[in-house]
Image 1 (cartoon, one colour):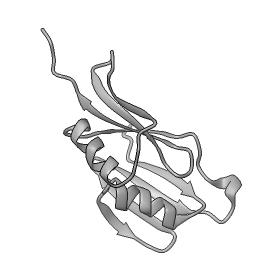
Image 2 (tube, helix red, strand yellow):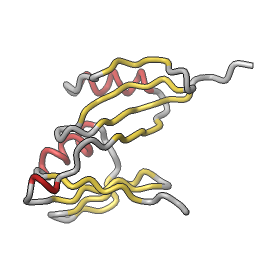
Image 3 (tube, one colour):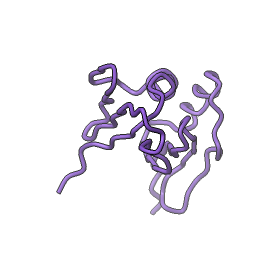
Image 4 (cartoon, rainbow, N blue to C red):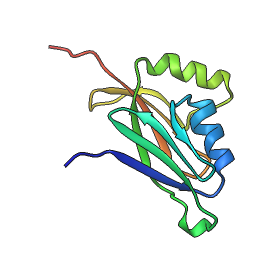
Length: 117
């Protein structure tokens, strides 16, 4: 079994695109009016517009590995995005920072900590 796609059902596509495409700079694979995919190889994050707020996705946690969580945090702060939890070294071997998307989904960005022998 292989995980390939996470689809977030969003009530406001323009807010979703402003966050995921414009602020986080996720690379768009393709975009339609009601559906957008971001290339996060080997997986895909997709946004699907829903007219019904009860169908929107809430409470999802995304964990995205990045090259330098501190540098990315600084760039995101320059764009006006403030973390809900600041960059922190975690016991599970990553330095992470936490954000919330406009719909209440957690987006955790992480960089592996150096291995200590």
